[in-house]
Amino acid sequence: MVAIPLAHVSWAIADNADRKPCDAFFQDVFGAETAYEMLITPDTEAMGLDREESLMMIGDTMIIPIAPAGTGAAEGAPIGDMLRRSAAPNRWLGLALKVADLASADAWFRARDFKLHYDPGMEAHYFLISRGQALGVRLEILVQDLPNDPRRDPNWTPAKWRDEHPLGIEGLQSVGVSVPSLDEARELFAGRFEWPEVGSRELLEDKANCASFLLGDTVIEAIQGRDESGPVARHAREVKGIYCLTFKVKDGKAAAAYLRGRGYELVGDTSARFAIPSELAHGRLIYLTEQEVGGYPPLGSRLQEPALFPVEGQASQ
Image 1: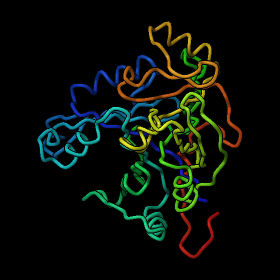
Image 2 (image 1 turned 135 degrees about the vertical axis):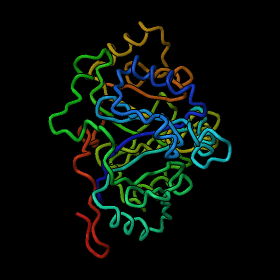
Image 3 (image 1 turned 45 degrees about the vertical axis):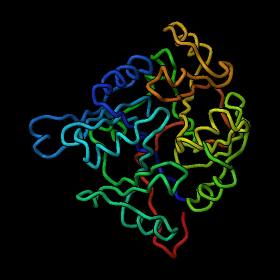
């Protein structure tokens, strides 16, 4: 396998006026810190900037809510229209994965029959694998560094989220993806992507079965709902793709007490895995758990070790 570190997770907001309240929620509740903000200014508007976004850190994980703005605010603008189409509750844009060399990554994915898309002018920076090819997960294969990314500093540490914030976040444990069947997930994730399966289990709070695949510095949890009328199965049918994130916390009871003290009712089991309801979290389902899962990688970003794909014909390391 080739271990690919996670660069960021993103989602779309239809109206840029809603972006600031979304940022404020994650800053206030999760302690998110803004590393960089891409804004419309006279200069960027003249350059044709079509969106606004905040690159925010929660521990060592970067999240990016993106809204159309500038030239993207007009109907018919390609990026703006894509963001408006994608801005549905519980629908995420996708994952960005960091690679060391774009040409070798291009060859590796093409050899596995993925169709790649390059945005004009960005051919040296990233390519995209569409949602339709990856069970609803849009993948951005990225070689460029993200602006002001604190993880590039070898002396930076996310320990304050664990030690100083009331949630006690230790790191991102997994990215949950709703799937119509675990067999289909295995064909894609373990087969074409060559991400090893590291376990399977029941997720009682979701009434679902789960198969887990090692992406690199985190895990993709393919989640199949057992109840066809339940939220996971409905998500797999109607929304597709990323269903949730799960962060590991040092003390689940303390984290739950903090959120309840802020006035939030919680879903799930506070002794296992729980979340603020997505409708109260700007359409995002973000679980917290103190439980470790056997076979999962140690918590922590490996962004300073971008994936190096072998030349085709040579074995992966």
